[in-house]
Length: 296
Ligand code: BG6
Image (cartoon, rainbow, N blue to C red; front, side):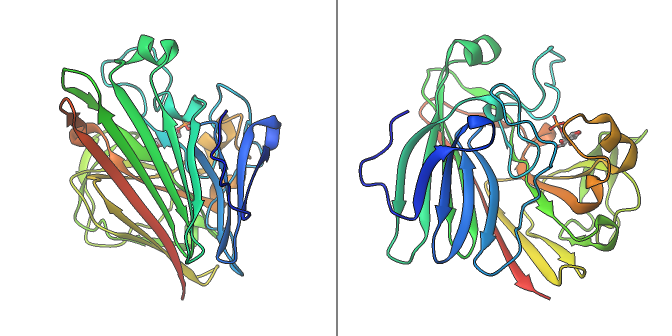
């Protein structure tokens, strides 16, 4: 793997868990870890504050397997592929080795990392070979993640994507999510999948697995136990996925602790299902998500 020569002193590259290459960012503003495996932001904490992201104690850290927690990067399909093909869930981006393109520190202390993924024989067997994906992560008082997809070929294609963010919460049963009131969603677990959220914030009393559609809304996770609210702001995204596996599904997942469902919630910004994207030759499309927290 090649890295730029002017590597800032607040960033270190070394082996992380499982020996996977990891960028550790430790600046006056924040700390973060980014694995090149999956271009995976595994942790982020503003200086003096609790970590924003949840990471399972049972996560795999091995080539070919996704990491459970942080921000898995979902591309180019979401969940099981819509054509029913027998392919890995949530696409190949989270299982692929990304290249580091640039790492730099700005005058204001923010650190920006750019990672890149290009087609290889494995991805081309599953998808087309006419794209390049760039992922720009900016670590400062807030965390900004931008996934940019370019069509390098001569034909349009369609793709899904998501920043599958696992947030650390005090107790999922005590939190509320605002921003999706009245929004239509597709549920992966309800008998009638297409429904509409009522006019109230989302609360958790059972498993929830929903793709909210046609929404650009900012979501806010109110967490009285941690005395904070997390603000999820996005651009270039029409879908927001909300997921908590609850008790039974947690037990079925080998890479997730039986009780960890209480301490996490996924609020994922992306484009999925009805909001699948189409990209024409030469076009570049960007999904951008900014996370920040405030004291309650
Ligand atoms: C969510 C999906 O985004 O990811 C759920 O909506 C899925 O259906 C969850 O269970 C976790 O997926 P995976 O492949 O990481 O176990």
